[in-house]
Length: 402
Image (cartoon, rainbow, N blue to C red):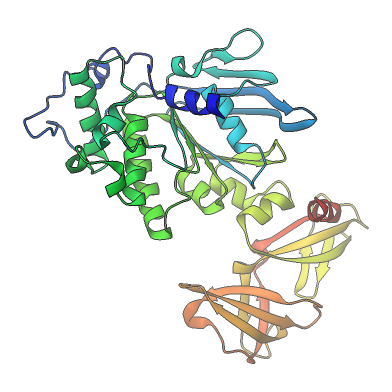
């Protein structure tokens, strides 16, 4: 753990190219600092050079435990990749390998097509041009906010480092707190300082380990949008680790879904939502009603209708998944008869629990809050054919057992 903490701090220092000011690196001249300590160009993050990050058949083993299994991913320059999956699936391990905090047991990591970890070479964290941002922010309580941000700029003169730190603080809206200490800041403000410290060295690659998980929902949404804006301005290539599917869909140009150390599926958020590769991916991105069925004549029958089952041979046992958002409540006498058992207020939508003819267990529907019927109401139930997903029955059973 001590080695990890040391590496984490070192990774913020000695970024390649840091011998020049950020403005000089970007080719726009020097950034001046006035008497008040504010920069002449406020509110914009300086640009770095876009960098490609690639993993080639990366595995990581701890004794008999295989934490990562043959992971291959490519993050194009200037893009955001979200690593999504449950706890223990290998997300943070892959991030630590990218940072150089850990070595892969097999495979290679490349930055701009240059091997930085693999059988032939290992580049230490401080030489990779990689910035790190952690869930706990890792701010130094004995340093001022400005000095926290300037901590990783040791290749610059003191004046240059302070100028760069001021620029980063101004970009995250905290320039006025430069001389204060972290303990006076709220959690969201501390997160902004951590972001300023991560972008100040102009890293080509920025790695973020669940950076928003400690924030309240409204602040988390604001910080996600602000962080995305800064990433687009800096053009840094970024990996964000998260277990929140909505966060991954909102932030990622690409999403990589992991389970038990393996990549289940990669693609854009619409691709993963509309065409999940398996039932695990479907459950990750949607709230589902799941119905067992058997394919006959290329169709899977359920109490709510019969649906095409392409790719399945007759006699196949399948699970028909109906997205809760695709359930439609209609007037009594239309659709399949049902009764409202319970309702739950979720803000803009309501979750309706239903007893539906032909089903042994409850069915759930998500409807507009204004359309939520009262418990005990008799209704008709339909399902949109476009909300149907069909998977092999054994895939759902294996996940339930794991």
